[in-house]
Image (tube, rainbow, N blue to C red):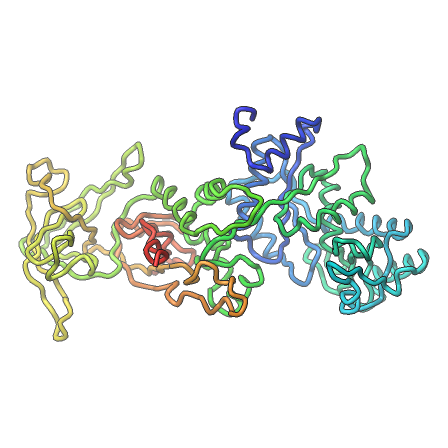
Length: 560
């Protein structure tokens, strides 16, 4: 990696410095440690790509560890979803681990801390304990139970474990320093009583370790060399190290915690609590709603794993938080799909076109290129007939010179087909256009080799043959929030900024080749954007989700 030193991020510099100072490369080991209390979101994707990316760069193992210490919020559903998301992003973990695997060892170490006079059972409630914590400028007050005897603490802790007390009756606290400058060091809680079945251990335990006690010790048990956390855990590092000091064997690898900044994404929220509100209050349909910033939601919308990995690589790792515009993520998605998505024609707001001089009853199968970006060009057959649909916005009775689509007396080329000229319109009693009557140039067929086939006209439109059109349900998604930072204003509920037009359901008319489309498959609807087959698709109802437009439609709005 010496040739790439200039482009290393600060996390990689830390690892390189450790290797330079004698740390054995074979001892490198990383982990991604989600709590299974919700679905992973785009913020987690950066952490996944960081840790597993380091594993690939240094040929080191990476564990997937579930920090499952709170049975009131954690479920097997979330475990399964997390595993699916990490695998979908393209990563393989060395070991699948759970903090609950270590409950017995953590308990045994806690007992040893009591014996060493470094932990005690506190019988106050959480309110009383919080009131004694002090402030950043004022020392805390010792608990009245801080000087219990070792024998009494051991007996009480055993009874806590055996289920002899109600939830909340006692906690186990580390005995550190109630005057410490870092308030997290003021006798932190290590265990609490919770009479709640755990998704893996069921009712084996009724005391559960706190995150700070569990996390570093789990890293140590797994011999993780570098534990990378987001910036809010910077103040926890001192406690992380203190707990490690109590169990550390100098013959083993000692984990090192270091922190990096979150990358916040505009026009969304990533707080699990707020995402849960979106689901519970039915602002969205589920955790995998395509408007959600969850990995499962983005996958359902048609985002690719490669695009998300590229996005994470593009924004990089930093020491300071900043807001990343969602348009960058959309750019990465658009860039990847442009390479791989087949082109098809679908009309979402149809108006009927009748080609008056096209022979009655005649049909043709025209060649259409699947993807011009593909080195090995392939073609499909698209049916053409006398009556077609085009987009309603692609026609005007009267238009200025800058309107290069169809207008009365004007010509356009139909994609892969012929040049047509608009002659007249048929309207209903209210003046709405029902039909556009056109004529076509039979010698202008695309690819036919005639001089007329290469004749230049300024507009090219997509279309579908009405007789052959496949009726589909199309869900047109937009950004879920109207403002870049919906949770920035603490005086307002973030739900006040929900975009009322974040979902519009329309009926689309697609070329018949899409009848064979599979769930999850993505296409470029020519001139409209990228669309993905939704999981709710059935044999009788093909559903497409709009993934992203062909260009950033919010750019001008955001400049206003």
